[in-house]
Amino acid sequence: IVDTWVRPGGKGASSGLGSAEQGHRVLVVTQSNAAASNIQERMEVFGVPCVRVGMHMQSEEFLSQRFFRRFCEEKEIADLEGAYDEPTRRAILSPLLQKVVKRAPVVVMTCISSGNMGLLGQVRFSRVLLDEAAQATEPTSLVPLMTGASAFACVGDDKQLPATVVSRQAQAGGLS
Image 1 (tube, one colour):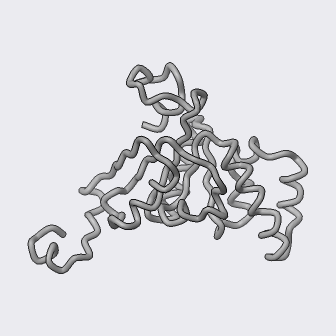
Image 2 (image 1 turned 60 degrees about the horizontal axis):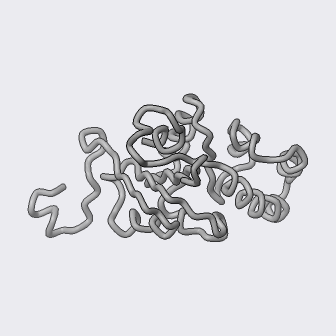
């Protein structure tokens, strides 16, 4: 789905979903940090220009991303590499992440982090993909919609990860 949304002329490009080059930006969200990292790594392998962002991440996690480096200037990378104390790192990181998020056609993060406007700034995403949808609760899955999505796709394999059911009534009815 993301490849179709981002690459014009790729498989499914005639579906009318558009591309990043046409102004469509894609936000890929998931319930866990581990899943977000896995998604970013897999998309990078396939050449999808994406970045994984989050305020809890270490500098090395950002700098190990090929496309993160591509969206930064050399001085910004050097500043981040040289930030040894937490206050300095945070002072450098917040504006840098907002800049990278503006430049990247695909951004990967957790559902909850997508509500951090200090992280995303005023960036809007016309497409949102929720991975591991069965693991997300309804309120959590609504957070990424605040980014202006006109298309929202939920994907997941309920055989791989069963649905998260927090309602005792639903559990009693056999929905868990």
